[in-house]
Length: 423
Image (cartoon, rainbow, N blue to C red; front, side, top):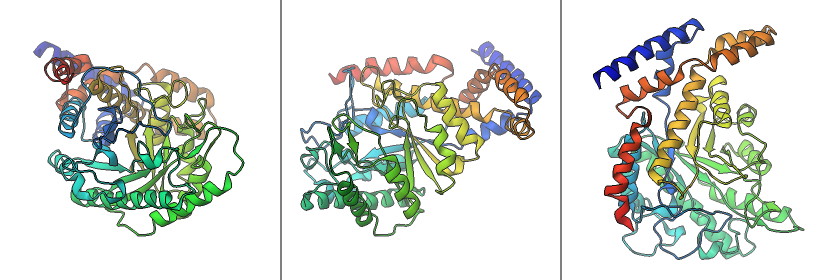
């Protein structure tokens, strides 16, 4: 072990020299990375189930495939799974929680009546870990969402119910942010749309705007709660039309000072959200990213260190946007170990950010501004083979988490000792 550690440090020292030769301060890059929190999504741990036990199917175009053993069945089990995942990821991160993960002591509490008290154990858990939390209203898997319509519903009673749910969730988000001393991003996504040929696209959007106006009417302290709104191109069961389109929410966010959520799976398969970041941040103070991996559009595969992920990280870092961008993950894969899915995705996101932070950005910018596109392209190609892996290994080791694939041993043992007993 001592010899392996020595070799790792020698590799890191060599990497520092290689990066210094192109004008990159590795230690400075690692200091920045250590301050970047990634918001882990609770719904990976139990296949977007939640704890209401309502018997309703997911709906809203959401689908989870796979039946790998060990799905969390209770909030305590889910927190234990998250504890393990977080122990295998360098840095201090956040939890992204959905409203359907409320703990109500076995009582049925309607979503428009949810209170901060129903999330107190989550808050206590996060406080003990010195981490922040984010929050989401749950506009699916409910009898009043059975037809796929919520905030755009023609039935005033149903529409008002979902507005009240959003109001309740904003107050919960504010309570979370106040308790944890860091703003909670409360993100609104709804499934509302139409499966086939649609005559009236205007009226649902008018109702959606009215619903959002009512939901956001009460100002909340941004030190505690930040409102975000999330678009989608189409969904299963809403292939023709989705009321909450990118254009709709971009306009609303700009007009009303809200965060725009860009989900990597919610656009055309050939689109990347990387190119949208610098465009929307000309008009918005902050944005939220939901980082996913769509293979066939919004398939929500586990995030890996792909070209798309690298492009997202590069755009955030190159633009100096890290203080203005909230990064969360959003995928749910039940075909593999769910704890491993968290670890793989979060470590991949951090590695993408590290790669962006290790770019000789000043040199590249100078080449671009001088019109030397030949040297710019040559430099891009040259830095692809610099020893980022040695820097990542050093970061993991100094953060006290497993280096390389060693983290998988802990997950396998947990699977044998804990997950396998949840059958």
